[in-house]
Amino acid sequence: MMEPRAVSPHTPSIDRLIGELNALSQISAAEPPVVTRIVFSEADLRARAYVKGLCREAGLSVHQDAIGNTFARWGGTEPSLAPIGTGSHIDAIPNAGLYDGCVGVLGGLEAIRVLQELGFKPRRSIELVIFTAEEPTRFGIGCLGSRMMAGVLSPEQALALRDKEGRGPEELRSLAGFEGSLESVALSRGRFHQFIELHIEQGPILEKEGIDVGVVTHIAAPASMRIIIEGEGGHAGGRLMPGRKDALAAAAELILALEAAAKSTGAIDTVGTVGVCEVFPGAVNSIPSRVRLETDIRDIDEARRDAVIDRLQTTCKEVAERRGVSIATEMVNADPPAACDPAILNAMEHAAKSAGKSCKRMVSRAYHDSLFMARITPVAMLFIPCRGGVSHRPDEYASPGWIGSGVHVLARTLATLAS
Ligand SMILES: [Zn+2]
View: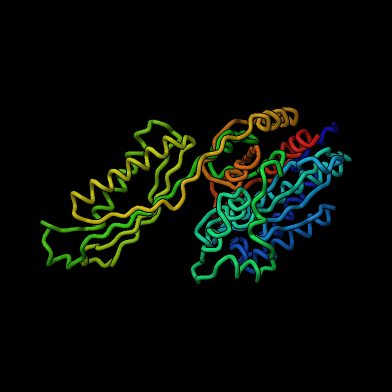
């Protein structure tokens, strides 16, 4: 096998990649440097066209499925073998930065080009994947494209999704030019041989410890539960304290109960958050009659996470009874965690070592398309540092050196896996 040459921040390929990342960031619904690219928006479609153009320039053959997942293939010498996949997403939440997702897509392309320029000939094809709608902004569900690819979200379930304007994927995908049966989006196990996603850490560990790359062993299992509390409203002065059915006071108990339940596992990997608390009617002199809470509960151990959810549900019943309010819960999603493939982890660690890069095993607490790819193929993720752990903000930043190290390790790993 030919050894990929060192990719340093000073090599032209990194200048090329940084230039492309910057060019992609200019394709935004917001004023640059703020990146906003909602799936199937005009900015998303222009960004896709830009990246597909770069893939074609690199000699990759590009095709897309019925929901817009895009595959750009560098053919191997044994094209009948299942390819090695790499990639991520280019959609971005409102007011985002330019590295989340895009580093995995354009960095994956750069890794392919570096190998091409070295004259490396992969035995297995290497396929760059750009997933549709990793971010939940438009349809309220994350990883739309990879969920459908993995068969976790059925075409019927996908077709029932609506955005804030009441528009669904059927209308929007056809306006965007994606056609064909949604049934064909799901891929069989074995369609990919292995899959690797390069991504910024979105946490502070690598930068703080001065480590070049993180080798992700597990992707935490996210769950989201909606809680609707119905109490009784009334005048904040006129209604005395005895017999009140204050929906927000009940919600306060639940928020603290979730915090306590998440802490009670004693595991550092259990986290529980209430990120949304919507109070009705929301007037200073009115007793809250209705509250909506959106909770997020994650762990790398599914049973332990589900125990936290059970405990919260028990508290809901107890609080409802004691306070005389009604509490309804609805699981919005509860996905299993993914364990990354030991063979890919070893290949990544070996690649880091031969590239002279420091690396560390770690857990991804954010979810990614790889969580769903893990249902149909062995996966692993490669993290690079991001400044201050900041992500999903315009000041998100990864240095050319950090990106270069990630691409270098990715290129070496792809070369090993495709040989
Ligand atoms: Zn991402």
